[in-house]
Length: 102
Image 1 (cartoon, one colour):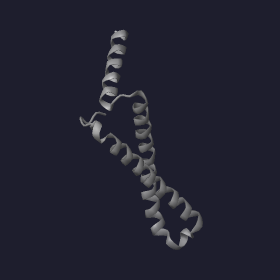
Image 2 (cartoon, helix red, strand yellow):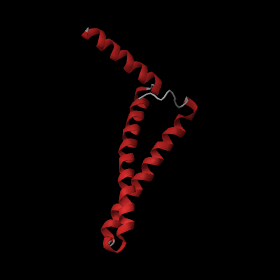
Image 3 (cartoon, one colour):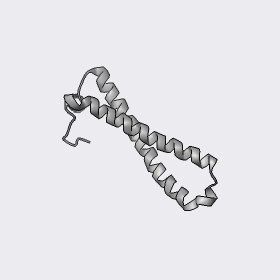
Image 4 (cartoon, one colour):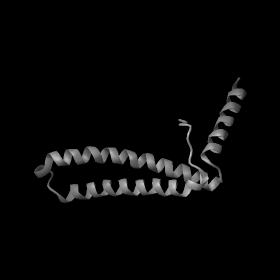
């Protein structure tokens, strides 16, 4: 999905630090929730556990999405291309595939 927005070259390190920081924060939350679950007595705080696990589930989903984003940007850094260049290359390859199938 293209949102018609990109991170400028001057802000790229800050952006990458932000997504890694968000990943670590969410991962810490999920790990702490798992740790507390095994140490606590859930029946004593059932309503709080339900809320914590609902938010923990959402956080776990975001952890997976952030891992995908981090891996993509590590790939782009390795290739030395921007997100925009990556999308342009993908579109060109898709157009070539469509032409070759026709």
